[in-house]
Length: 78
Image 1: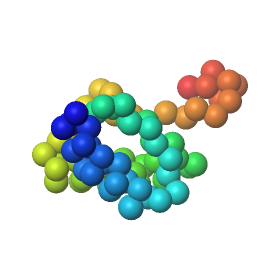
Image 2: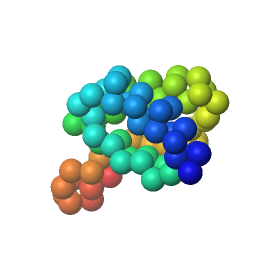
Image 3: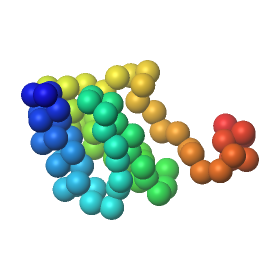
């Protein structure tokens, strides 16, 4: 419960303040951030790479990635 409270302030509130138009879901210490463009996704990722160490955390190197999720035909090309 304390970890969830910590993440609420360290991640949720920060992301809402810094990127108010970006939607996200967080499950404990995992999150999915929805961005309208690849450019915005890269901006958010770069900001998270700075933010997480500021609060004593790190992004998981193999779980952290940008994924295009719009439509089946696009997904088939990836």
